Image (cartoon, rainbow, N blue to C red; front, side, top):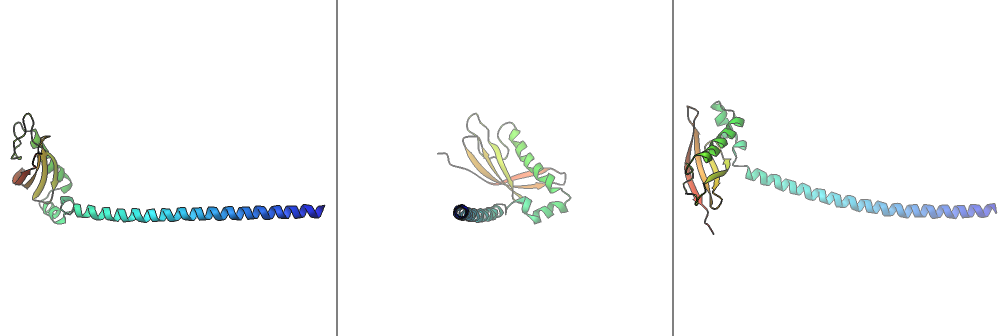
Length: 166
């Protein structure tokens, strides 16, 4: 009788060990597949990040914030660039508040509206690109600017265009 109990216990133990082995192997394969999937996703994300960083670098090439020569130009004249850039943009946006037609936009607005500058991008220490709209018509401006010795900002429209209305 004792011998039979040991045989049953032995068979039961072998079955439990076999079950544990098969279950562990299945779980290990599942986890490995999951890890491989995550590793391929991580590689895809890293490639996407690298592509986006390259795109950002290309887009920001013509940008006063990243143009060391233009920044040096202003610093040599005694300006703090981190305060000067918002000042220049604010001065352009203040022109939106002038009554009547916009002083820089060479196009008349549609009836009952006013042309206003929406977005400003400082390219370097001399050039600005801006877009304008009255809600119906829109266009872009290429401006030059300079800071006079009396700390006044002067803008000059070099080129402008109005998108065709469809």
